[in-house]
Length: 266
Ligand SMILES: [Ca+2]
Ligand SMILES: [Ca+2]
Ligand SMILES: [Ca+2]
Image (cartoon, rainbow, N blue to C red; front, top):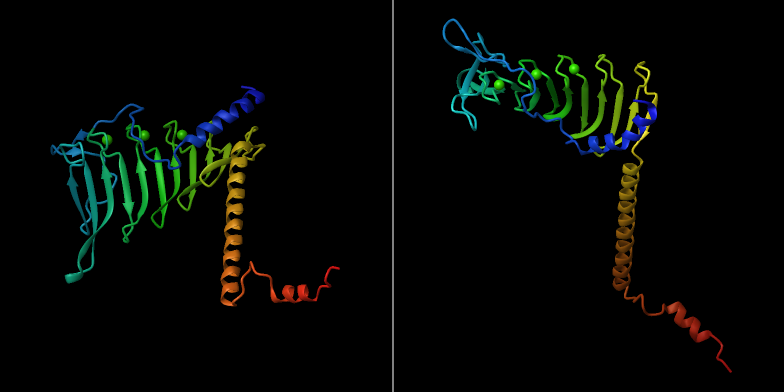
């Protein structure tokens, strides 16, 4: 694809990207070869647990059947904290077999405040994690995706205040980012492309239509704020005039006296 073709496709690319949900989320459509749960020598099923609890005396695990499952497919792991009357358990890890193949494919970890810390997922059920989500103070902060399922992340999404703020992509899968996207208010504003592979942006493409709409919206907000402020000031003046016993509609005493002094027409 030559440069002009790439440029002509850009509006479409930007439109498609803008249409994508802000959150990377975890979609579970089988895309690759599946894995099968294996039976151990003692007859138990190896569900490839993603939580760290086996062989730990200070942790406890419980299994339940989630919606649509007849067998337990959700495991919760609790940390035992405190002693005596203060002894209680805190949820630190929850893992799910979301496609009911017997193998756990999503895991979320929590801190002792109950806030989400991270989530890992095998979104194509090939037995390999391809989605890594990081939370900061319980809020979505970063999503790394392995979109070609080669084991290496090639898409990095960064969030600020819960909104998508930046995306970098390794589109030719050489482990180096070559596309940088900057978002404002969760919407794509500009996109930088590294054309020669030196990890530096060679070209910034702006979505001018999006920027114009954003600026129009900002201007409208400013106009509305100014109109509100003007109305407020007018109301305040009216109130103060009434309190001072003057009526804005009536001529002021100065004007009245001037009128009296004005020479009479002959
Ligand atoms: Ca599974
Ligand atoms: Ca996978
Ligand atoms: Ca990859």
